[in-house]
Length: 302
Image 1 (spheres, one colour):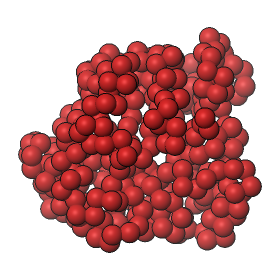
Image 2 (cartoon, helix red, strand yellow; image 1 turned 30 degrees about the horizontal axis):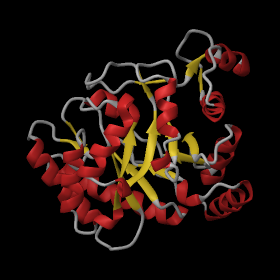
Image 3 (cartoon, helix red, strand yellow; image 1 turned 30 degrees about the vertical axis):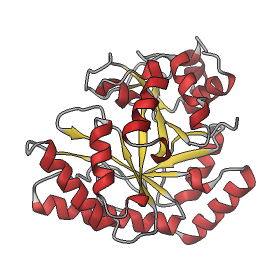
Image 4 (cartoon, one colour; image 1 turned 135 degrees about the horizontal axis):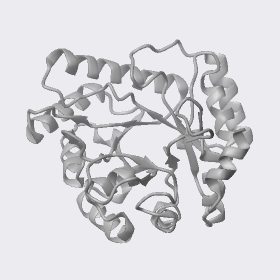
């Protein structure tokens, strides 16, 4: 079984997609996910076409299939909002992200469905559907993967039923898929440790063919906590062995898996933190937990 595994990597205005590819390769990855700009603001630098072309050539050389590479839409997009100005901003900004995905030759964009902020589930879902119909106004183009959410605050997309309601009511829903997030599923109340049963439920409600990617994260919280706090692989309540079963599940072998686990401090402070992905991916490939992983990471970056 070919393992399609990567992590969140950076994307800068100077290096563009080429820098993202190089970072992914330094961690031993064969896919990756990135923001096309800072997730908390609206600034987006122009895309350097020459850097993109170099990136595509490097991916081809190193065996990274660009169809497995994913853009993550910024958190500031909230299609569920009842505020007209914020809704229009969300639609227009997401349209811009879709356009940038086209320029970068990326097929998939992960999106947090949105938070209803007090107007209720039904109206919030209606707004998300309305927004996606405005964004996905063409039959063909990049696919938006709706991320399963933990249920923090008024988040929507926390149940398979909500996800299905969105998908079935969007006109061009051939351009909609789902991103399963293991931490979010756990925190939303799904039994990730009984993953066969979880997949069976998802298949009945949404359909396995709609899984576009998976975020592999351990959780700091017990099931149904609705807190959304990621933990490093093997250090949380889901556990290494359970995550390995998900990563290597036969029904998910064609699906890219992306790590979004926390950076590690090497000196006890928060000012200097470093990515754990090289070491987590080594463990995943070996299917064996490294008890000294935190020490190894700190020694590596000292």
